[in-house]
Amino acid sequence: MEITSAKFVISNSRADMCPEGNLPEYAFIGRSNVGKSSLINMLTNHSKLAMTSSTPGKTLLINHFLINNSWYLVDLPGYGYAQRGKKVMEQIKNIIQHYVLERMQMTCLFVLIDSRLEPQKIDLEFIEWLGENSVPFALVFTKADKQNIVKTQQNVERFLNTLKEQWEELPAYFITSAEKKTGRKEVLDYIDSINKS
Ligand code: GTP
Ligand code: MG
Image (cartoon, rainbow, N blue to C red; front, side, top):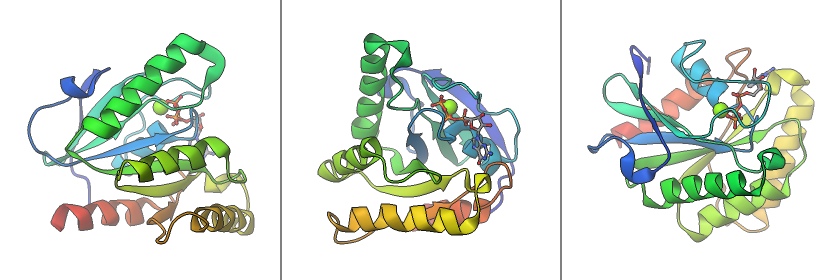
């Protein structure tokens, strides 16, 4: 599948203020700075569609981008960034929880994991919460350009092995680099296959 148009539609803090209608949407979640906004730019071939920053905590709202006039990519705030204080952390947690649990159009949640790190408790707990709430999700291991492929594969394997302790079936997963555009086709084809099903 190719993306022929990508348009920013709206930013807001509440699931019930997201665009109306029944178009399917694919949202990106993960720890602050893991590369959610960069991945959206990479997928859409736009350098500045979603705002990115080297400082964590850049995206603080729910952002909808209309793709090919037929589905949405959704950029979400990151979890686990304590620097902005407890109140902001709580607000962000609320935004994420309401969106993930209430947004019926949300067809698949891509959970981004930093491919350089060993399994992180915060990511594992978030995935467990998705399971408890039957939220459909896939995994994306980001920033693969930052290290050699062997190290990336080791970390991916460790993460999947940890999930296997709790899950009977593993989710779909992708290895990406926003820098090198690795994994672009795979993620877009996956979205396409769900849109067509
Ligand atoms: P928040 O909005 O703060 O939650 O962060 P985010 O998850 O949206 O991360 P963002 O896309 O803003 O990227 C954070 C930093 O990581 C930026 O400096 C990006 O340039 C960098 N980055 C993201 N993806 C990649 C990647 O695949 N490779 C490399 N080398 N850098 C990346
Ligand atoms: Mg962001």
